[in-house]
Image (cartoon, rainbow, N blue to C red; front, side):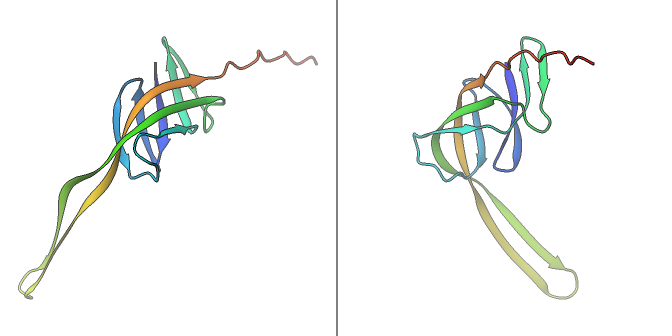
Length: 114
């Protein structure tokens, strides 16, 4: 079973017991978070695509820790003008451990009578 879920403005394909690095979330280390913006859900070959999200589906995760990514160097130069600028930064990430994918069973739709 896997799901495609939107976390912090990005889409991730997640499975149970998987570790995912997402943009920094405002959550304490060790706390549990839930994401209800599940865009696609696959279970035993059956694919359920949401419009825009799957009704009643949630992904739960545990915040492992907050880390910084590798340093990114931004270098700007204009040739023959003596212009050079060197900047850099380290992006902050949150390490999530996916604990489960939950789906509420939908009641069977009633057939419309004409």
